[in-house]
Length: 284
Image (cartoon, rainbow, N blue to C red; front, side):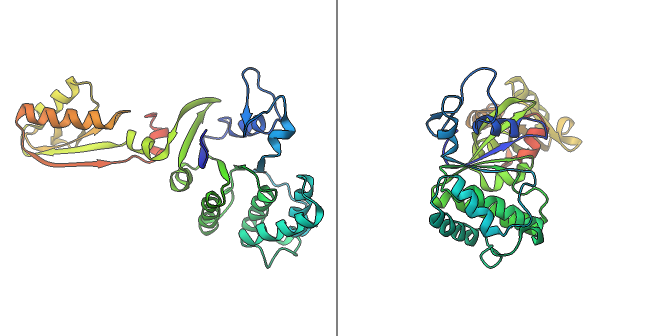
């Protein structure tokens, strides 16, 4: 996977957390190899983990400890000297918006604040890659927006992110690349923008000959969906042409077909599908 912000998406049970366990060296692959930041995980799990930050999905924070103590202690466990760990803990808690609350016990924190503490501890040792498991889980709309904004900022600090979530909208908003899993298998991987456009559609509206246009495009192997009852039977109307892996060739086919049939084009527009529509509809 490339550097930057990568979304790891799939339904519950798709294998996202299992993949994280493999990357962290907490589980061994049944076959094949796993390499993280230049380290073969099976051969050098400590080396791999030294370059990783991990934000688990489940509740894992000691409730009687302050946020500063939790983050600095985990910084020391990651290899930072005590003084440097305390300084770094203060910096990352400020980054996630908990500067004034850092000396309060975690037990008095809201769900959103606890998520921020988990994010802070994943960053305290300045990782090359942060593995974030469902960082927006349990958050209200405002908290979700704030968490996504924090995740998006990490790229400006040179930290790559692998964001695991079942909320595809989160990925579409902040991630440059998408990796989709379903039942433990890779469905698709690629740039977010490319996948959105590949699973969208072109809407073609003509003043006459909609039936002939539909038949001609279908004969070219394109998937055509009628827009309204008159699209297939009437002379005027509109159709949606599903975009495949090569949007330019689909657009060329539409243009050439219109020219061959001599049909008057009234409107041609494009619309990208959401990741939810693409994944749930099986278009990817």
